[in-house]
Image (cartoon, rainbow, N blue to C red; front, side, top):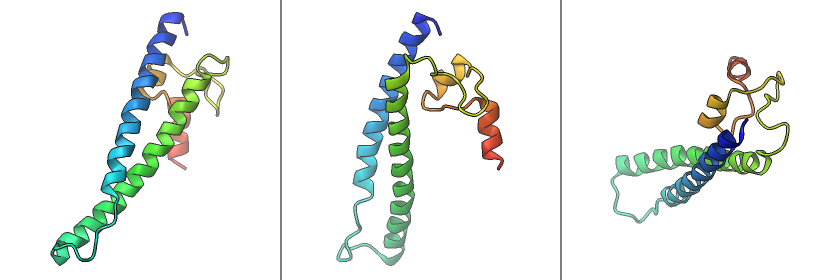
Amino acid sequence: MNKLELLKLHEKISLEISATANKIENLKELIKPVAPDNALGRLTRLDAIGSKSINEAALSQARDKLNKLRYAKANIDKPGFGICSECEKTIPFARILIMPESNLCVSCAEDLENL
């Protein structure tokens, strides 16, 4: 990667970290327990409990993404950054820009997904 690409990637990762951190804070609010004395109808309570489970899963994914983004930011200037951890080929810059937290090329990510 050239210096301009690195600068662009640093900026992208910083923006993604900020957006993901905000998403985590919003999801934390959504997973608060539904109080049993709350005046919700039975179906509404079940919907709230179902939504809570979905939001808990989204929170877990967002935390994982944030950790990966922070790792990417810390390692962006190291020689192995941008190398697929499976096949050891260079990950195209466009892929890194779209998913800076990924350490797999498209081909290896698809292979892993199909297992």
